[in-house]
Length: 331
Image 1 (cartoon, rainbow, N blue to C red):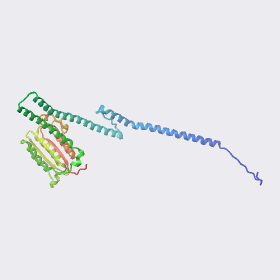
Image 2: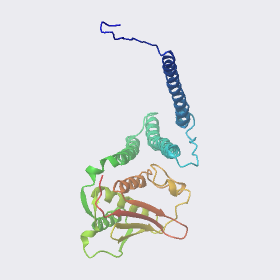
Image 3: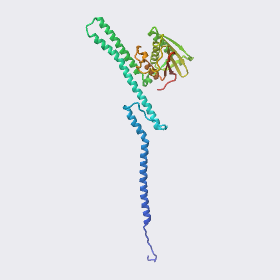
Image 4: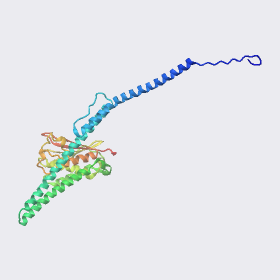
């Protein structure tokens, strides 16, 4: 009681129930938080593993394919999802790689065979000439024969160099000319007929534009002339009568040049492989050559972003058709 007679009452209390409730709530929230974090982490681990399992399977299968089994392919599910599309893309890549390996093995085998023959002949002739003393004329004969074999090796090396120089990477630097294809066709006729008196080349023109400049394409004049010359010379070489027909036609987008002859048809089993380097069928086994010409032609036309096709059936002319785009190309 104060001096004035008033009373001052001081009261205090502890909320035991409220503190206990808050403490329990804090523990409950902490436990719930860690439980949610644990469930989320476990669920993420499970679902991530399930999502990555197809990728792990792809990695395992691709790792097993090389070098063990290049013919094995990834299984593509019916679902059109990202994994299925990725598997299809990888399968196409593996198909191209397998084909590249096959072509490489065939190329090496054929080059080895082509190089082995003249080298063996050179070695044999020189060894025989050294077995005993011979007359000067015999030595001259041996030297001439060896020179012929060396010439064959030089020609083969030259063909290989030309084949290696025609690459898609060089397109920007090579395809800078404006080439009048009608003029090249006439030049090719003169060049081929000069090779062999038996060869005869006839030129036909289909529907042509009013403006002769529309017969021009963007490309490399030397390479296009080489391709047409190889095809025309082959047509005369394998024709029964030594004749070849070059037909030139035109449409707004393409310039079409076909070379045909009436010789023996190309076997259907050989058609898929005639543009491969050094491939020679039984039909051409006895004909002088290296099997490089058509491969070089195909590379040149592909370099110009053109198309080349061949049709050959019994009783009908064999026709090689070249389509060259008249559109300005971007590389």
